[in-house]
Image 1 (cartoon, rainbow, N blue to C red):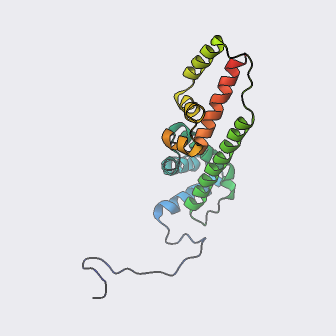
Image 2: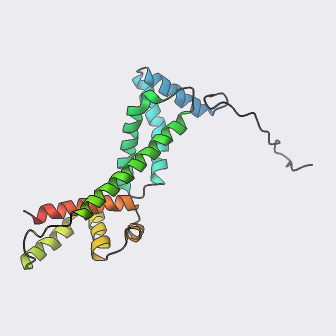
Length: 197
């Protein structure tokens, strides 16, 4: 009895299929490929059905990689938009999922690069003292910081008040370094607007 277990069929291996061959693909994968093929021909109902089918799968994929709920929602919208723009590039003879998740990974990578550039710009342009740091300015600054959204306020405090390194600040905030950079940059712009009026 070489390695077989009672009650289980023996494990068998089949010849590998060509990359474009949908034979033997799971039913859900074949259905998604057919929906996208119909969508490419202009079938709006099929396109809607496809988005309803893959939407939860894409969101779960993103949620595992993007901790911040708002950032995840933004990334989800970006992926759906990218899918829409690239739908003509899909080959219906191939499984849809690898193509779809390649788009999702590309979107996440592009968002990370964009956040990094935004943060670098913010650091390269330190705030200009528009007025002397008198008591009135200090009160305005404290009020402006209190009025920031919670996530932006937290980013400013962790990075600029506590002086934590970016990675440590992101870990403490429970988000990615890219998301924290975006939050800090948005907070910086908001404070700059408030203090230069």
